[in-house]
Amino acid sequence: MKHILKRVFSLMIMMAALLPVSAQGISVSSFQMLENDLTANTHGTMMNDFNGQPAALIKVVTTAQGFAFDGGMTGIVKVQQKIGEIWVYVPHGIKRMTIQHQQLGTLRDYYFPIPIEKARTYEMVLSAGQVQTVTNVSVTKQFVVFNIEPANAMLEFDNEILTVDESGMAAKSVPFGKYQYRVSCENYHTEAGVIEVNAESKANIQVSLKPNFGWIDLTAASEDYNGAHIYLNNHRIGQLPMRTEPLKSGDYQLRIVKQMYKSFEQQVKVSDNQTTPLVVSLQPNFAQVTFEVSPQTEIWIDEQQKGVGESVVRLEPGEYKVETRRASHQSNSQLIQIGSLEDQRIALRDPVPLYGSVEVMTSPLGVKVYMDGEEVGETPLMLGEVLIGKHDLLFEKASYQPLTKQIEVAHNETAKMNVNLQKRGTSSAASPSASQTTKHETAQSDAQSDAQADAKKSLREAKRQARRRVPKNEYFRNMALYTGVALRPNVSPTNGDFGYLALHAGATIKSVNLDCNWAFDPEDFVYQKYDARLGYSLKAGRVFMFTPQVGYEASAGFSPIDGEYKKLQEGLVLACRSQLCAAKGFALEVTPSYSLADKHLDLQFGFVFNFSLVKIK
Image (cartoon, rainbow, N blue to C red):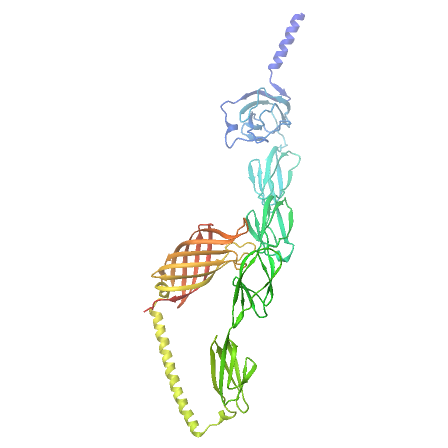
């Protein structure tokens, strides 16, 4: 009997092991891997887990709805309700899962009988009791609300881009479960996370991105440093003083260059949402030179006037041509060498005066003579060592009308003048015969005036007819020289840069055009461009002409690498010169050009004067 009971008890244990796992009304009938199902490894239905790895997919076959799944610490990636089944995405390597239902109860800690691998599809068949709904409706979805700053950020929620409104708000209704989100924006640090949606209340997510940019505030320790050019990572960004535009956080190489000063270099670190202040002090690279000359003597250094009389001038080390000038004097020039930065005094040679002489005769004699406001004697008069140039002479004598004359004196020559003075009151006396003579002369003068008026009228009419017959732009196209001035504005101005002022000249011979241009920065004259172009002129009606051109261009200035003045770039340039003849010898022009050296587009506009070398018939 004991032996029979033992066999019955063993049989009951075996039957219990073979029965489906169940909990109240939920049970797992079968669990298997679907070898030929590629849903978990196909674009569009493939999901990544929280670590960015492909997730496994468990297709839960059941006719009931309202199930909730819990993977414990490993988590559930996503749950999707499909027709006749539920897709549950889980991380690979998960060991167990809990299944819950509001009416059917809970199947806790169901251990998977086989390992769960990444990007593989499995099938779980559930057997569940019948759920009868009388009056209650089960809610399985809830809202997720985001409040994002800045409002122009991009929101990715569950691999979907959600629209963020102007106030930074975004919302979406989703089934219960856990979801991933990611918020990103240019110049801000990206923020990502996981949220859980349940029936308790809507999920409110507040996201404030942290900036990954900052600023540099540059000020000069002295007003003498203002206007220095600022380079950041070898790119010119402006002049002292300035506050930079937002810069991405990190390290930057700062370089500040100004004439007469040594270059300033420093490594600057830009931190998130911080302003880095920097006070710049430049070391002088010049000597203060005091030039000693007589008063009223002009001092010119390398063809630029630096002062009048004794003057203090700042000069960098190097060689200079110094010239002293003064009216009616011969200039004096000399070369000087500045070798150190110490203050020094240099005595310059004064200009040499240039003299001539003046001989004055009057009728009557004995007339007082004043030269440039000073009395110099009575006539007859011979004056020696008179400075060359123009001088004002005043003649005075009692009972005679004063007389003013101007005389010009040349070097080593005698200027002669002979004047007649009139007695006071003689100019008003007139006899009857003189009156008749005057009337006759007046009549002749009127006749001559009428003839001149008719001649001028005829001449104007002839010129008008000539203008009608000859196209205006013939003055430009046959054989002519021209010169003009133009502007090259900066197409995208930054930090107050105006652009370039251009001077140009050229010639056109039988439609072949040679054009030369020189452009410079009007602020400091240290950045310059040169080019020479060859083109062919094409007529377009009476007053328009277009000239396609090709040429060579070079630019010079202070190098951002070593601060020295040198040639910066050179190469081919393409242009099209367009001009409108506004009047004979005068035209307006617009010339777009493209430099192949620095890949830069310029637009030059201005006016030119044309000088025809052939006569238009």
